[in-house]
Length: 296
Image 1 (cartoon, rainbow, N blue to C red):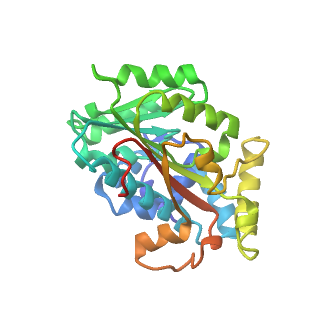
Image 2 (image 1 turned 90 degrees about the vertical axis):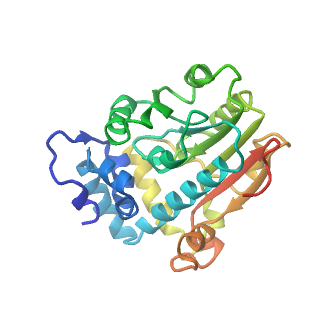
């Protein structure tokens, strides 16, 4: 089974929740190609996600392609945004969970290029794993436990990370997050972030409405996300069309949009599982505001 080779022994491994472990099992082929992320995953117990993996593999045996395309796209996009110029930049990964995006940024980090990862729990142990793997660079990574849906908590998490000049440039990552926050809550998060920096980029990965997915593919996200919704006792998933995302942002933002077919093409140079825009159900908007909002 995919992911078993990253769980050599459950002794002293840190247990990960079933839904988070599921995503990491789907992404295990991606993590194996990178020494740091491979070593990081080796320190986690992902066994809680195996039952969900078996369940969803029966619905779509190649679903791991979705997650790997997504992770590759977001990593490449954030790296490109980070090196657009030499100005100080803070990458903020909201709802980061145990995703090791910060480790993929390690070659770029410095006193002026930092990462802040925020989630409700597990962040202390996550930073301990970073300290073990990249002791010299771990000081440029902050792992903070906070409820990002509470404006005060989000501000409290980010403001202490400022230097004397504030947060001059932000890159905000929302991966696997937007489905679980109501639109009013997301608007509040974006409004809070907007006040922190004039120069800002937002990588907004999201679930598309069923009407925008082809008839022959619609059952895949419906069955999987309906099961996830019931499993976590959530009432409904939040979806966005490409027009609804800019509507939540100020007019000063420019926005580029990428369907799963675009992400797959970027990763493998063509299309295999996602030949058309409506053959995928996860998409990503990249919004930018400020003097650095030229295309990457």
